Length: 590
Image (tube, rainbow, N blue to C red; front, side, top):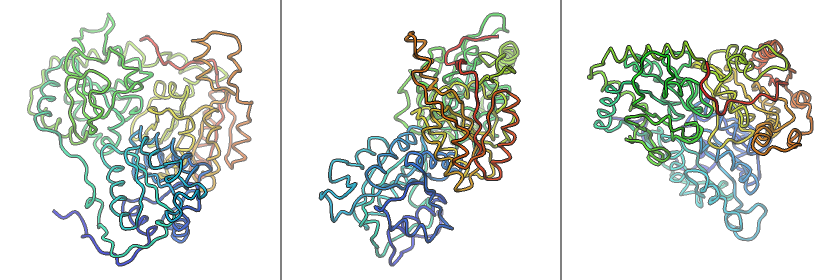
């Protein structure tokens, strides 16, 4: 079967032109970075072809990396970062590490000084002196190489693309010296389509699928847990997956970073099992007395999760079933790494779901068991709230409670919105108190937990999907780290929205230290200098709002959604009840 147009031979082409030709073949329209002289030849070409490929100039290289991450998560295509040598490369490193941990398909290209001057202490020289940037990135991402000749460019660049765009996605790095970037190569063979140099994993072992299908259909109280690796799968297969779980009658939970991949208002949804969990999964694992009879929890199928601490509420032993515990992932290294599973399956999760759906159709469903399970689930949801403190989610008190703010966001964001929670207490409020259904998506980065990630990533998200509402939620500490990227949004008419908790504090740390190391003086020990975030935002070119009450937030969010749709950045400064603590650990409550 043909995979596209045949390979062609290009008589002569510059390295910058060849680089952009590969990126355009992969559908890349935006590059992110801060310019530097080490890749001046590429900058010159980007300037000439700016109507085809945009080079988005960030205010900091880490911010550029986060923007590229948001661009990839929302748009689906490769996120590309181009920064200079030395500090440019090291500044971008945190974003590369964050992308790798979150399985984002990203390519970091860093400049390097000319090989002709290697070892002579040229300004910002790295590889041949004390800073081996290739090795530094190799410690943080899946693939890192230095291109030392024009003739090697094609082989090494294609390898980077294979790693980055495989299943699961990876983050990769290439270092290109100035003289190589400025060179021209002859008789270059170029592919007609990406399928000619990279392929993705396909189906699972039929015997594995049959075994999982038999165990699922024999279970009395099974559950499916969706992880971050199901993002791309359910973007195209949600209808099929939903029909499958409805037919079998199996409840679905998600990890915190997979929140809302399955509709949270669906009768079969248990919402988030990750840290901090919804109240429902714990009740399903260990039912309280007074509910209809329920058989023991006896089956767990994990799809696309490495089962880390945030995914499992710190490896909660209640998650382990009294029966088959199956983990399916395309990455063999994560299977069985964190919890004692009974079966591991190496497979691309989309293909696995299709095979499992088909395999279960040939097996009988015990309708009495299915009916009993669904009756228990419905009664549990009727009797128990999914929220640790449902009263606060409906509170009209001033200053506004974060729980109430999450309800307002849930109700007011248009379908298809993209939410970027930042590090800190936001990691507690958003997974627990937001109620979201597809096509709205939430894009946390919990594996690294980098402050400032969402503040910058939301800009890339808005550039990838200008028609969608893109909202960052984070504290003032996170906002101050990369709030300068609001001016980047203004420069490129990206009407992103920032909802910033104004606490004049690194409140997650303050609350933690007060609880675990009681002593006077914690209240202002991590204070931030009382910045006027509204004036800061306006100085960067945004429209700003001051919010104290639920009605304030409703009015501000409505205006911000409208203003963001017109390409104007919007910053909502929320003066909330800073004494409120997220439900990082909470018992089941009625």
